[in-house]
Length: 290
Ligand code: NAP
Image (cartoon, rainbow, N blue to C red; front, top):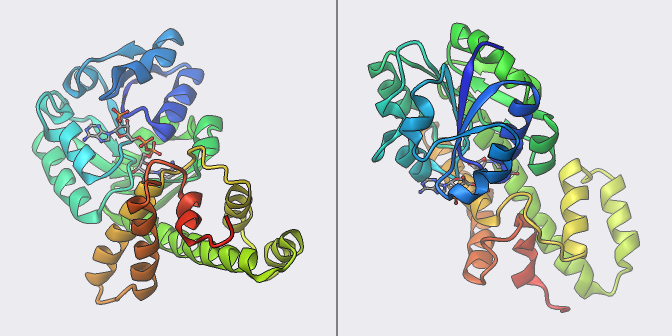
């Protein structure tokens, strides 16, 4: 592929995505605020950039995979930010789960540099990022998406074009609103099962194989039962997504009351010191049978 690609952000998701770009033979430059996280990729053939501006300067596609709006703003527009060096015609891909309001602002800033922004957040988690099995939820122009498609394909099993700028970000927040509420209700349900004296294995089998069952319920109930909080998705990032979802739904005059109570459970877990563990740890403050 004749494209130079830069990726900004090598956390749980960005590192797996970058590894798949390298595997596809794409010429790749990587940037991460904490440089040590780039080492494995550099050993694998990626070029290292000490700043986002350096990463973006020769790239025809720049991908960001960062924690939140604050991180995205810092990396695109801060000191030595990527927007300082992007060239006209560059396609910028914001894959972080960000607020649609920030996506709109970023798209405007990109246009001032003659670049086009796609919002392309993902579904799938650590394993899907590592195995190139993500689904991209894309907002933006058909032309920009066509230019980006070979690169997105190297990281995904599916690319869904949802509409104009911001459409991907909106869809992602709806998706994570439903996920967050389900994880929060599972935490309460499982704490209840544990306190009830019911047989845990039988109770979970009924839930997982019955109407409430879902891939999320299966994965998270297993992590909760085994207290396995090795990070697939940081608890504090789910709290962030639920907050963004509430703000976005409010612009359509929809009040996400179930998000409100779910967010309270995630915030309680953060206050209890679980913010940097997997979101399954949301159950810990609720457990009465330790
Ligand atoms: P992560 O492991 O916490 O990585 C976050 C990345 O953002 C790191 O590269 C981090 O740099 C960088 N960052 C944070 N604050 C920054 C700042 N102020 N300035 C510059 N860089 C900053 O998160 P992740 O799990 O990869 O998630 C990345 C995005 O994808 C998030 O928006 C998340 O909601 C979304 N997402 C995650 C999953 C999942 O299952 N993990 C699934 C779908 C979508 P450092 O390394 O220096 O801290």
